[in-house]
Image (cartoon, rainbow, N blue to C red; front, side, top):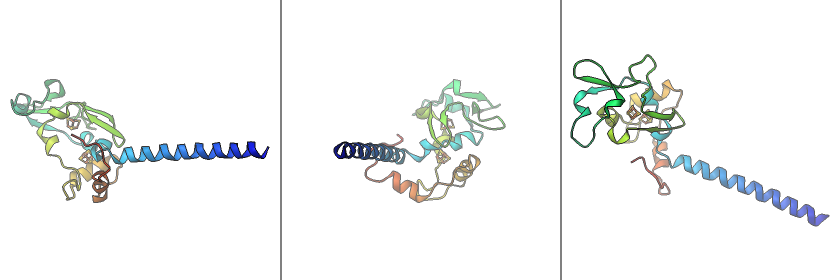
Amino acid sequence: MRCCLNVQVGLQRLAELVIIFCMSLKTQEKLNVHPCQRCGACCAAFRVSFWRSELSSGGSWQVPLEAVEDSGGSLVSLKGTTQHNPGCDSLKGRVGDQVTCQIYENRPSPCRNFKASYEEGYREERCDLARSKHGLRPLTKQDWKVFRSPSRPVSLE
Ligand code: SF4
Ligand code: SF4
């Protein structure tokens, strides 16, 4: 009887250890993801307009025609960003959780130039503003320290 009890306690402990191990793996996984891939707030906070020439720049990227709408004259805007509550149609996932840009390699210049707070050591007001619109706290230097730790196996690009 005592022996059975010992086995039961042992199995229970083992199950607990497996759960703790899985949870720590999940946490590590989250820390390894670029902060923007867990955010996406700026893609759902502002109107994104740019020169029509970016649709056929012939340069290193070309914004897909189907991702934009006409904004008059020489300007186009990303679909979904001109509405009252902007949200780029090319953003997939859930803001503040896990997101991807479906046209990442060909995103327009405003997206390329938008900086995340403290990614380059400075606070970026618009990043903070976008995040606050979605109830997210501003990024800190600590977020980048964790992301850039030597154990990090993945990056955004
Ligand atoms: S194109 Fe991509 S990066 Fe730019 S607003 Fe849309 S989802 Fe965001
Ligand atoms: S730049 Fe700022 S608001 Fe935009 S996705 Fe990154 S952290 Fe979020």
